Length: 377
Image (cartoon, rainbow, N blue to C red; front, side, top):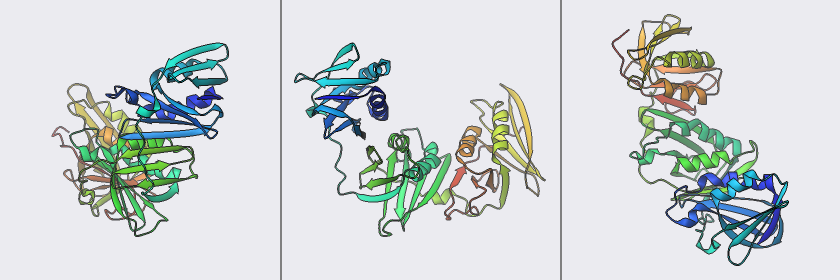
């Protein structure tokens, strides 16, 4: 194998596949990147046996072939090169020579025959959509996914395809994010899939062009996304995903419009007065006003106020400010609508520009479980 390529382009390709490489792989070959030079293209592949990624670009191929190189060392070396182009060649003993201007390096690799093949997705169901649409769906839901392995089915984004509509859900049991995407696909195409968070992150990272079309491949145990120059393939998580519709309030009695940026600013301020043992902010709704307060013996107390369109008797509920801020950052509108029932039921949040809050509607919805109200005022 022998090829010449721009150093910047090769660095870009490696950055696309590097995160998939296992840092402490039990199988040595999984610490390597597969490099293939053929048909005028350079193809890089990495896998951890759960998530695999392949990307490709045009290159000057002088001799076709393939090898695998240790990902970390190869990436570190390329980052330090100042040459515009780099020439890479591999001999029969899997010794790869890297030439950059007057510099020469030799790196030991492993034979490509030991590298696992990526799964065949030729029999998969296919959905076409714009890259920006899928990235938006993942962005709106993946932040709420559980990071705890003991809730295995919740460690991925749930995707349900039914009736020409794709529903995306992320939840860790304390917060929930759900979003919809209308599909121009065959309405008979149905199925449910739990995509691992690592795969979601890699897919989202490699969706670059907002309006460029991409293909989503779906199989009972695997999912893949093919965009302009990248394919990401992942095994799906197993297990039963909870019926999230049951925890979304059907029609909250109280719906308040709140300026999103102002709420973010004030919530950041008052959250400084929470502690690890009491990470809770009290929301007190009164006539035309929302008060945010926190009081902890370790730090002190904070109280901020803002105008809202609330009328009626005092209503108090407490939320985790970190989770609430996550929701606000992933909302899009200038104002949000917040639906509240009481101190014991979940709060529900949507963008102001979206449809009225309803558990069964097409609106992107965020749900946050309340925290116990401290008796201190």
